[in-house]
Image (tube, rainbow, N blue to C red):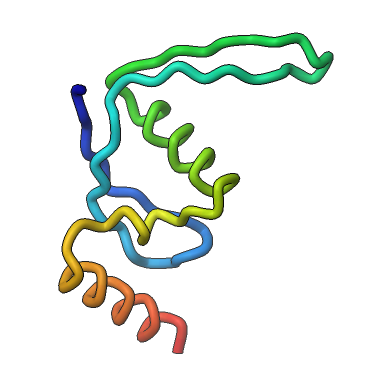
Length: 85
């Protein structure tokens, strides 16, 4: 599966922008406002990363959960905590 990497930010975590690797193509099934089933597909764009980021939120996942490497995660979370002070 092809992937893409973007530096992501989140209103829940100010001032940290880790590089997050995600699938580069997705297909999403959803209900529109009239409750009509729809499908949206996208590839190779920041919109694809944003949709995955927001879907993660609905599943209780924040982007810091996707940071590769415990040292990098610890460094970024320390930076976030220092920013909050």
